[in-house]
Amino acid sequence: MNTRVPGENKPVIAILTTSDKERKFCGNRNNFRDIIKVGRDLGYFVYVVTVRDLKLDSRVITGFVPIPGGKLWSSIPVPLPQIIYNRIPTRELEEKPLIARKIAQCLERPDIVLYNPFFFNKWHLFEWLKGSRATSKHVPQTKRLRSSRTLSSMLKYHNSLYLKPENGKAGKGIMRLMYRSDAILPYRLQIQGGKRNLTYKAASLERLWTRIGKEKGTEMYIVQQAIELTTHRGRPFDLRVLLQKNGRGSWGVTGIGARLAGARSITTHVPRGGSIEEPASMLEGTFGNERAAAILRSVPTTALLIARQIERACERTLGEMSMDLGVDESGGLWFFEANSRPMKFDEPAIRKLSLERIFQYSQYLAQQLN
Image 1 (cartoon, helix red, strand yellow):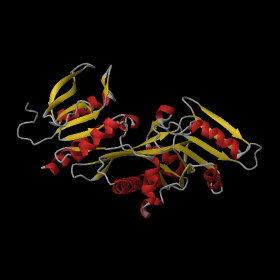
Image 2 (cartoon, rainbow, N blue to C red):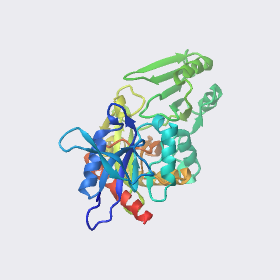
Image 3 (cartoon, rainbow, N blue to C red):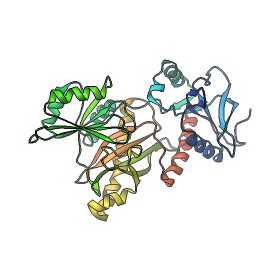
Image 4 (cartoon, rainbow, N blue to C red):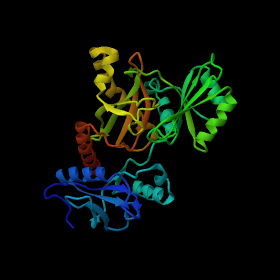
């Protein structure tokens, strides 16, 4: 099967996901359709492949491509890819022994490059960033939540803390703890539920710890100093930065968006009532035009510094990540989160470039194989 465009040396690219009994494969089909369309427009042969169908000892495997003009997909014989873009949708799937083994096999192959090898763990991220003087100043004080003593020691320095699952996603499981020494019930725990938050008040640390234990179950959590963020109309917001590698294999900032927290929400995630906003307009209300522009100019430098440190510390080749940065009341930037498998950005200019960058970096990776 000739999958190459005549006269061009372009790699075959597979979008990796997992199989699904009813729908053939898991993942965001609209996203996959967009990736394949842009790839084809740029002259690449691109398809979706499941872990099960990625038979590394075969020259021809089964892949999925969208049928034009509809929502259906067809399975076709395709050549083994040179570049694998990992879009396995969840951490739980990725950690299954069969899937973990297949990813490990791909990483060992000299003739294939798989990028985005794993999801990030929050604790590891903060440990990696604390390892560099240049990035540690952007990291809130963070500890592993092992006992009520951890909370007690953190509350000596900070009267507001965030409790976050180490392997959480989209704000799920996040709690905010506030301490007011003058209140009858001094401990106030905000628990982020589905569409609304619950608030639990406790007189003692022991009572509070019991409730936290019920909420977190066996999940590993971190506890983190709450940063006083600047607000827009009384609501906190953060900056969402998309970083990707380009055709030279170097990190670049694809775009910067802003996410405004929903009413009464303790995070800025859109599924939890947050909204997509324009970064400059969020900052200008507090800082004025000139200062807001200066803060925005500092974002790419800081984000690139952080991305390079994460890649250096994790000792794996990464191709992209999204990053949440908060802006405090004096204009300082704080790192809150990085995602190695970014959700798609809805801002049209960012979305367009993000799709093109996948192929620019894939072409660079393929050249390293030759």
